[in-house]
Length: 344
View 1: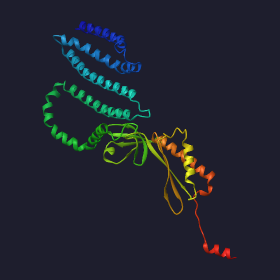
View 2 (view 1 turned 60 degrees about the horizontal axis):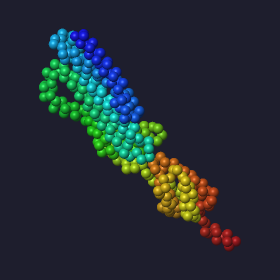
View 3 (view 1 turned 135 degrees about the vertical axis):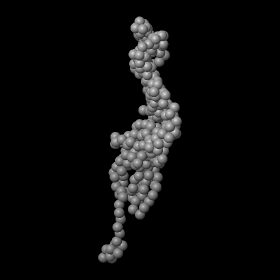
View 4 (view 1 turned 90 degrees about the vertical axis):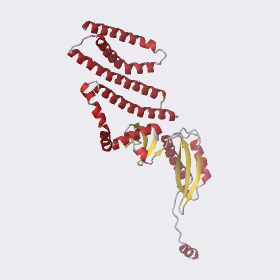
């Protein structure tokens, strides 16, 4: 038996190192990034998986094994189950890293990339949990006492599932909501949203919760059920393109055409503006001031914010320097006093 083990281990070492040497030749069509991604994630799991198989091979040809060898054989079968599960999980990690590299979200048109990454990351978490659960179940079924009571456990599974369902209904609802987010995708990774009055980006989407990165670097941890049951704003659902508004309140004497000309000057060769929309309109008039709305467009919401701030500052400065008499003012007239003064 020892000779069988020695021969099997020798064959394993030769095969493993030959596989390492030939891997670059076998994967010659892949880029350096993909090659390193595969080798870095799979080299160690492959080593232990092949080692485990090489130790199991002598037992398949052994005619008689004693109690100790039988327990070793059982242990190797259990480790084989978990090594296969580990390999599958690492393969999913390789796939995720490949998708992240292929579908980048740090580009202007990243709608498809965010869609792909969101779906895969949530489904990856679900499948990983299922792999671990199935691996643990199969490993437990290798023990005879557990396998023998499997029938009675199955018979009581109906009652147990009802009890567990009532006690963990919130957790189950969150998991189901997480799966719904992956399929329906009301939100995606890097979406700009307004949740509970907070403006931020979707940073993480997990099975039971979502992390929203707020503009001031705070994080909101929101249950996945929130995005299924509540109303929220998603500013990048179809595209990142967005309109921004700037409101000015001036006296009635301000020349609107001059503001339009100044807006054209400010937007000329301005990288913050995407050359789509620029409008100046009088949207309201009260007894004291006139409301002027400047409507401009940008490629995304952070850029729109910067453009709005810039235009607001420059247009106020323009009115202060060129039309100071058109700044908001309050008029008070005393007709009787005016008449008395004129008569004197």
